[in-house]
Image (cartoon, rainbow, N blue to C red; front, top):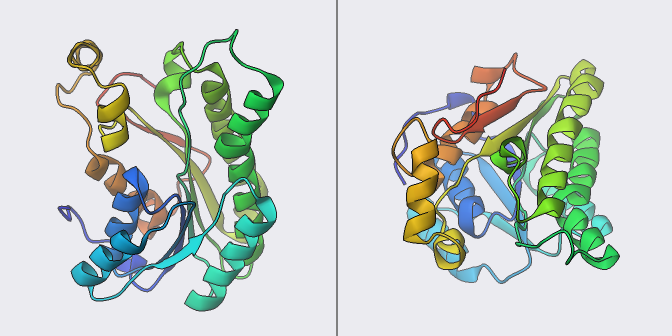
Length: 255
């Protein structure tokens, strides 16, 4: 991964990432470690191979805390474990999500609850614990939303509902937590070509069609998202909070 900028204040900071062992999350772990941060991440699957790769690359390993983010008690306990290991918590990145495709008619109450438990509930309770851990000295929270709900995309209404909720949650928490010097922003990526997207949905036709909607005629890569998260996490953006920052090559327009 190319390091486009150095954020000096991130060095030595304690960072907790949900889903930090695969996809964009793995790129985030790599990116924060390259800045000198102490990274902990939670994920369901064994991450031994990835941890070894990070140790070989950076000379030190991230702290992997295995678990399911829908288990709220475990999620928050692992955040406390990470804070104890790294001397507190400075940055939370809520990245883990599931954009499973579905139609309106296919959604059952159980499926709805499952999707919200991953894509919204876990974000809320990770923010709750982060606020407790950051209260003494402040910090930064970055919540992953998506341009999918801004575009009004069909094909996954439970997912787009959650992402709209994430943006609203970020704005409300920014005001509630501002007095404690805790910044809360949402990041809405466009279509980032991760391995999952390439395997499941990124057909040549779909990619070509999507590119016609972008101002910048180049597909997004994980690096584009990592750079934005680093910016939102650093003191470079110290007076930014309550915002939804879009990185999508110019598909949607905010403001």
